[in-house]
Every structure is written in structure tokens, then in C-alpha cells.
Amino acid sequence: MNPYPLELRQRILDAIERGVGSAPLVARLFCVAVNTVYNLLHLRAQTGTLQPRPNPGGRPPAIPPERHDEVRHLLAAQPDLPRNHTRDSLAAL
Picture 1 (cartoon, rainbow, N blue to C red):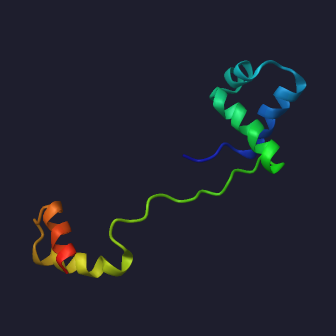
Picture 2: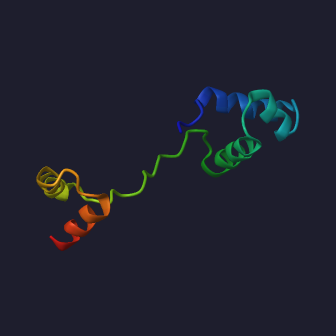
């Protein structure tokens, strides 16, 4: 999921600072979760900015890129090989 635009983040916190209402009310006004408002307040207190934190990435791939050729050869030789047998064949290599 992409982070909210910086302009929206600023508008949310401006509404809080102007006293438009509580965090739940501001969240309803901007159609965001209440936790989003609290997280933005916490982010600004921690970092001094509303810039989104960098994405740490996801899980590492189950098969490292250097073994992709092995997988291609294995599947070329046996295209209907079930996934669990593919895994076991790679473990044996």
C-alpha cells in the first residue's frame, strides 16, 4: 500500500493543531483511520517531518536469484512437476 501524500498528511495535522476536533473526528473528516492520525503525530514528534519512512522491503525470495537458472532447467525438463517436488529436487542439488 502506498503512503498517503504529504499534502494530505499536512492537512490532517493542521486540522488537529487548529482544534477542528479530536483525532477520531479529524480521522472521519479525512476518511482515514484514527491510528493514521496518531501515527502521523508520533512520526512528526520522532522525526520532525511527515515524510514517510522508507519501505524496508518484503520477505526475501524463497529461491535466491543465483539459483533461478537451476529452477528453469528443472521445470523445462519436467514442466508438470508439483511445487513440493520442485522444492525437494532443488534441495537435493
